[in-house]
Image (cartoon, rainbow, N blue to C red; front, side, top):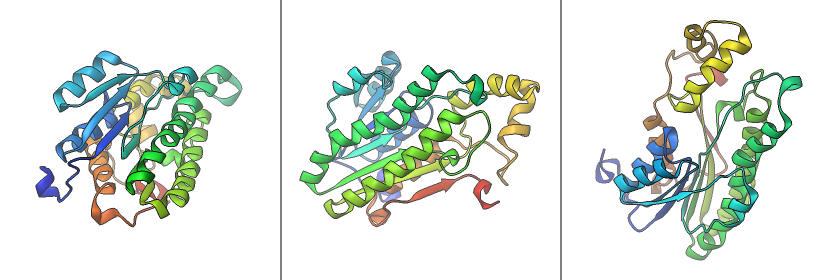
Length: 254
């Protein structure tokens, strides 16, 4: 879909997508670029970021968002920030490694705070900005064995709302996108962990664990999430602020 066909023209806008080398981030980077934005792809995998950015005519940045020093060194010049980078670990609370818990909160909660903190002055100066946080249905609901992920996403939801209240008067909106399970390497990587934790074969995980709650029995495609992200950058969505847009196939309708 072209930017003209979709009615979204982001020419002259700069976008930063974290975790932009694969999965949802890659789809968002590609869609924003098609809408005319100049995209910076930030990822832990520098080679993959270079590959994606090269195809989009954008820029690549390698950064470990779990490293506070790396966060301190980031220069953020973007009117559109898509906080997408994430990781998962599946384990009961009493067995959950504290260092893993801390790292996950740094990547999925502290890093978005630091990135947005750096981006806001420029957004305020221009009178326009879009903060889009890729949350999850787990930002609104909990599941067993995902204490760090659920805690981080719930925190991200709260942070997003604060930015919405502070940024609104300056032309800056902040919203969360909350998908259920998306067909990404992150989800594929959970299958073996879920099988081990729940004591079932891997081939049963998607149907018996991941698709039990949604009424629509399929995984979400990354491109579907990217379309919602681009919509939030459009003029039509200029009054969308402080919202959590749910893409869960009916999960939270229960």
